[in-house]
Image (cartoon, rainbow, N blue to C red; front, side, top):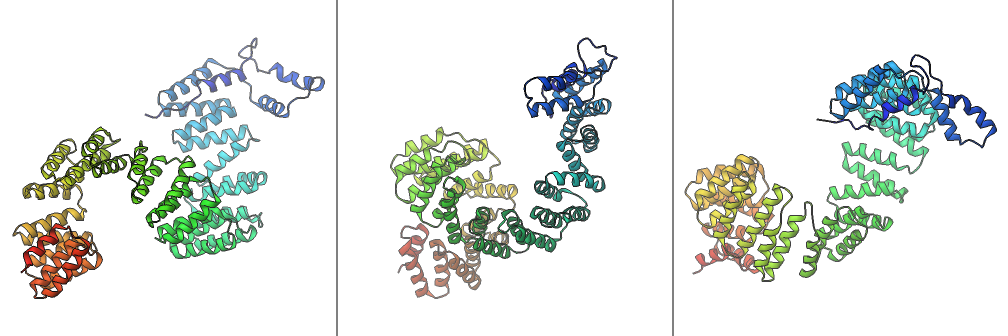
Length: 589
């Protein structure tokens, strides 16, 4: 249940102080003696602080009325109801008090409580009371205008907006533009903003507000034209440029990127546009260009961790580990919010640079978050490669994930250690124990199915994979794994082809699924179709197992020289692949 955040009875006590004075009967009107004396004191005494004098005048202007038991009771009801989560009672009681007292402080409180209660009608009524009782309050008028706009009461809002814009024109139009996308009658909103902006033809913020309203109304050409006018009035103004790029991107990413590139050519110091352009380059997989932009930004923003992190990750992705290390180290020196992320990737960089001890030190600094378990898994792998498998297993056993997904990943990491150590039975038992804790984990079910295949437990494999299909019906790899196993290890070829067709529908360009389909066609005797699928797979990914299968088909079709050349070529780059070696042994003379 939601509870209203309140200042403990502050509003009630404040009101009581304003309404009641010692020695005055409850039925008498209240006039504070201190207010009456203030002008005389100001004339004869020391100079009065202007802010204090203004506050005193505002206080004197507040309505005076006795604090009756009825009023005090209602205040207590409203505040206690808010504390206990009875927001509806608090809202209605405060609104009643605002009507009764006509006090701007009470009306303001009624607005706050009504908005917290999501009672738009009550908030609007309270805002009208507030604005009427405190006509010189800019905040009251702004609140009333915003609520009127949210209710599409544009006629009533327009004169209030005109007054507000006279007092704070540029910021006023920026605030107005932020509201435009939230209005229901977008065409009427556009017409309102155009009328308001007509009085300020040379103000770029006014053109920006028109653009926002036009975009909300779906008038993108008008929005672009308004933004172009804003740029003419204030060349190089980044908010207008950013909005124009966003609008262009709705129909053409290339146009948006072209616009940003041209804008940066004219205004190279536009940092926000450059950052947006760099991100767009990443999304477009133009990593070389993106890194150049992030590198420039990193030099322009030497303490900006987000920029240097992006530059470091791009450098790492491009294989430039030296530059990646430099950028990531700079990021770490900038006290980033994502320290664990930076430490994890510094560990990855150190691994690439063949510095396992440095990598392990970075991984050990990852304490929380999404990279906790991957970091511990990498630490464990480094320990295992260093001949310390017991320490690796102990590290993973001592690690506690922050959620179920992380704990599942820990079990998978432990299984990987056992698998690398050549213990298929231990892998199967570990995963089975994990499934007792997480019986609906598709990841553990899939991994146990693969372990079951190594042990010849095809019944477990099929049960687990079919359960994965129920849990994740769009998991192409589950259909692929079961289809391939049925094609390779059983005579249930029709079932295998059906499963693999489903997998291919879900992932039509996956080379391993293409390989499985080709192998199923080979086992079914359809050599021509088998060769077509396997050649497609090998072209996408020259994997040794795909090479082994394609060579089998070529051999079966009498193309033995081609098969031999293919196997030997693949063997040169994958001399330890078991499937390839076993295939060669079977076909050696």
